[in-house]
Length: 349
Image (cartoon, rainbow, N blue to C red; front, side, top):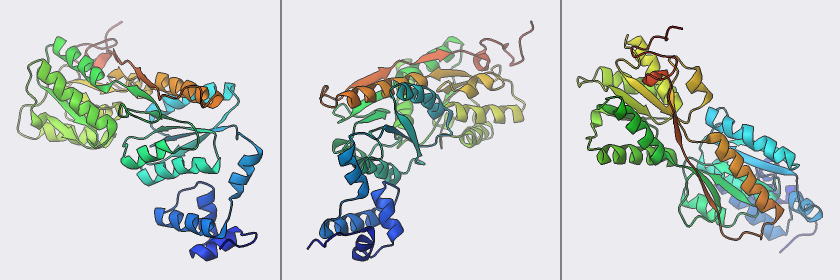
């Protein structure tokens, strides 16, 4: 039975948790799923309405939009942020950032937190999309735009890269340079980008009649340490080393370059290296890194535009929209392009 004038203290006593835990649940902050369920069940039993919900009855908007990504320090997400923030600011919205660490529970809490009206909409870029994500997308109380690939029956607007085509561009470029032992270093295969780039690599090699040598394939994380570990394994594994290496992102490629330098090998003379994402790191590396641009900045801009359209009139466009940003290859010295020579030394002026 509902009690008169229940408070957060009432909820805490009913649920058997601390007042701080109740506050975190109602403010959309991360808590354990078990705690969230207990608190919400207790609130329903005693007839409690969170202050955030009450406030939302007085005002239809918060003037805030949330942006949730794995790691806000990643240069890919920084490129997106640089486009999203000014677009939203011009429309009168502040941006709230969430760095989730690719933790599914954290991402689910961010989605559920929309029900507490801390933001009018959400742009989210999960590297894993689970059934739990899809369920929350379907019942989200505010507009959501996903940056990343979803299934065709996705319930929300979706801005995606075309990793498979990007990988093909890189493979064709390396083949055009006469490279045939083309290795590949990837991130986790259970992630959206890792799975897509692995499929793209294998399909591109097969279409061009090239076998995939599993000794030249390495799966780890999307980080510099993975690139270094992969290159060490290939250099000391007993098999012929690759004459080219395609990396699933620029951070991995930087680790490969580190290890090649340590081994005294020249880039691209001994091994040509290609990254993906074309972040600021690619142009600043030594040698400058050839990289597949997946349009990070453009994906951010398009996601912000889609969200603003939903916020302007949530019922105007009922069907979820899918936007695909085309990739392109930026050729630099790591494959013999600008500012480099075939032996990896800087070109003479």
